[in-house]
Length: 119
Image (cartoon, rainbow, N blue to C red; front, side, top):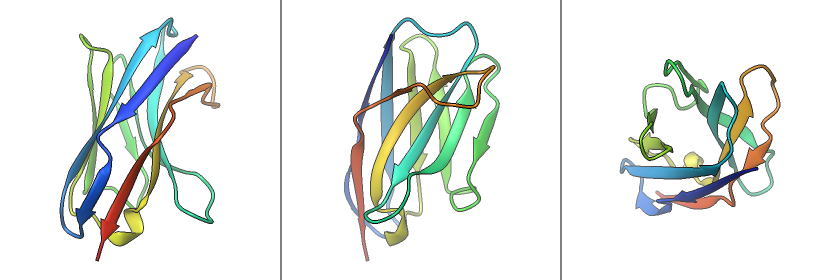
């Protein structure tokens, strides 16, 4: 079992920045990805970014590339999402998740944190 707890959401004006954190605990896979997803009202959940825990390879959705940065802290088992130049369309509940690197499905999810960007 893996427990994921997100924090750092809030209300920010367009053009501003926020940093989300996701602390992981419990048993993880030998090789895994941690990812960020988001879900806006009335829309399906979408991929935002992911990072391979060992090696640190990163991947981004086109809509956030160049504005968001995913990173990890190996010691504290925490993954971050630095969000800059925020836009109103970034408003959503943001979730972190983890998956075995051998599989495509994310198995464990956090409870989500709300990000609201005002225009």
